[in-house]
Amino acid sequence: MENLEYARLQMAFTLGFHIIFACIGMVMPFFMVIAHRKWLKTRNPLYLKLTKAWLKGVAIFFVTGAVSGTALSFELGMLWPEFMKHAGPIIGMPFSLEGAAFFVEAIALGFYLYGWNKLPEKFHWFTGIIIGISGVASGILVVSANGWMNAPSGFDYINGEFTNIDPVQAFLNPAWFTQALHMTLAAFVATSFAVAGLHAYQILRNNNPELHKQAFKIAISFGAVAAILQPLSGDLSAKDVAERQPVKLAAMEAHYETSKGVPLYIGGIVDEEKREVTNKLEIPNALSFLAFGDFDAEVKGLNDFPEDELPPVAIVHYAFQTMVGIGTLLMLAGLLYFISLKKKSWMDSRKYWWFFMLLAPLGFIALEAGWVVTEVGRQPWIIYGIMRTEDAVTPMPGIKFSFYMYLMVYIILAFTVTWLMKRQIRVLNADKE
Image 1 (cartoon, helix red, strand yellow):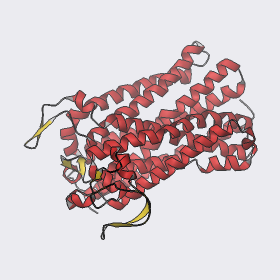
Image 2 (spheres, rainbow, N blue to C red; image 1 turned 180 degrees about the horizontal axis):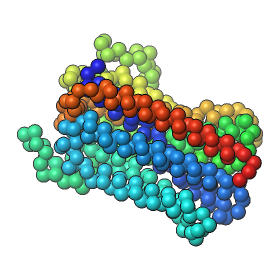
Image 3 (cartoon, rainbow, N blue to C red; image 1 turned 180 degrees about the vertical axis):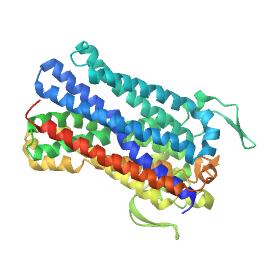
Image 4 (cartoon, helix red, strand yellow; image 1 turned 30 degrees about the vertical axis):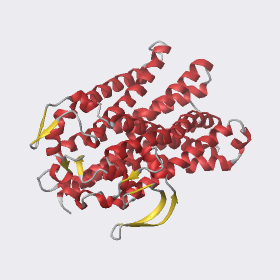
């Protein structure tokens, strides 16, 4: 493989790894402060034990996210120097603000970790809220920078030069809101269902079931609400993509011929050579309506775009189908949970806990698939319509050695985190405080 392929593989692998821990770091503090609030109100030691257990998890994932995120920041300059040369002065604002949010989160985490029996109870609890808010802010700021790559703004591009730079306009680019909303909800869905699934597994094993049932209820409540709201944010994102990146929309649906009243494909096998999709279900006129709010609207097909500006259609289509399919399933699971609050007998069935246990990894699979749609669907551009990915990569040889080194380090990091979390679960299940 060439430098470009190794650089893209390294960026994809490290970003795919980091995004999991970043999302957990965004969401788990909110579980922790809810449990802490219940402890303050009831003085039930079960909630105190749960709060401290989740606190240790937050600390572990914070450190892991910090390490993997720092590596990513180095990679931007190391792998894509031409991109950073021009993009750095334009999108430096969200990155610098993200750094500030990170430090606020770190300071608040320090107060929360070491403030037990030292700080006033309400202030101590409030520092937990600051951890969650600053974590979500960090995620939104990073997604804003990615939104700029999809909807470049805040500058004039004249004769190959970036001039008249407006960092605020670049920060508030046309894609930032829809991407940030969709990503934040996705983080809550993925993390909540994963945590709820782990606690469902402990309930099935009859390990301290009362504690794990309370933990399950806290986690799944966030996930169920986010999963039900997610299709609404997905609709906003689809309309935004249809307007700004019609080629990405066409790739998402593997739609080749420009036409009106276009159907929505469910499933399907893409043949990129023959430019067709087989074995799919069609919902008549649905794509036209979802993209433009008009059942008879025209949707551009892939055949209307230059060959060298098409993304890998099959990858984008399958990733999109995976994201939407899992998202729909988790939305239905969220509705099922709210129904089970009325039909409490459902929670006495092992099938109920098996169902939620099996859902545990699906949110993160959908999350990764969504990022594939966003990033691969933008190709061959690193800055959409302005700079190609191949023009941004480093000219220095030997990127494959960097890729293998990062791969080894991240695998070690993954095993370390897994061991630490298994250890925390054993402590949580122990009879002692």
